[in-house]
Length: 328
View 1 (cartoon, helix red, strand yellow):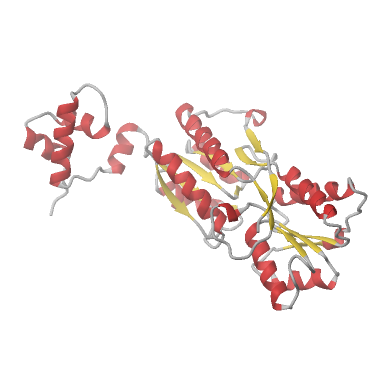
View 2: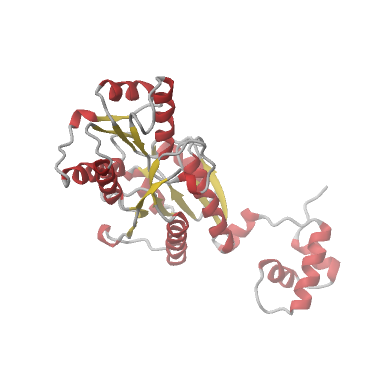
């Protein structure tokens, strides 16, 4: 069975191909009655738009790549759902790239560029060389949920330092005496900002944080790290995100350690708000929809402008406020 083309619809109705094209694209210049008739015939004939041809003709694929490092973290699914809904409002589809290392490398680019996307929203930092390649290919990029002042890329994220600071204050309010931090890879800058905020929040209440109470999850093994913090007699553990907090709590429960009675565990992201998490714990919350809307609007603005020569100081770095959320 051959693919239905615009000319087939035009022949069926006795109109020009240009008229059919306008109806399919929602362009002006034709009556609403004519548009409705064309769309009905196109649907009856089983017409499917050729995105590649449309991309070549108009210079836009109306496709945005969403990039993150793991499918396991519910936070990415929550945010991707919000991204899809927001982008779809503007006529964009999304394509997901997951399982990429904790930074986008040049070897990851072939699959992304091969899809002829108009832009990228990524939850993981691109390497500087990757940004150079994207710029040469005029692919607009927004870093979401993370920020790195060393990278020439626009970003939308939470105020990581304030989030850590609020956790420090909360832990002191709960009168804990032995605080630890369970971070992600050392190379992730926002993890360091959350730690710095924690240290300052504790210091504001007279507590001196011990550097050897920081452990980093460089590989996907959390239990040895939790064991190390338990051996250090930790009574409060601040985790980089909620999924790490959940895994930490699971390890503690296996050891018969009560949360929060014996060890207070604090996460970051508040996935409870959208995801039915059976285990309750304290977390850092933010307005996810507002953050996503800002990221999408920024990306679409960049796509519309197709700016090529921006200086590093001109890149937008938007921070959104956070709060402590006690889930029950």
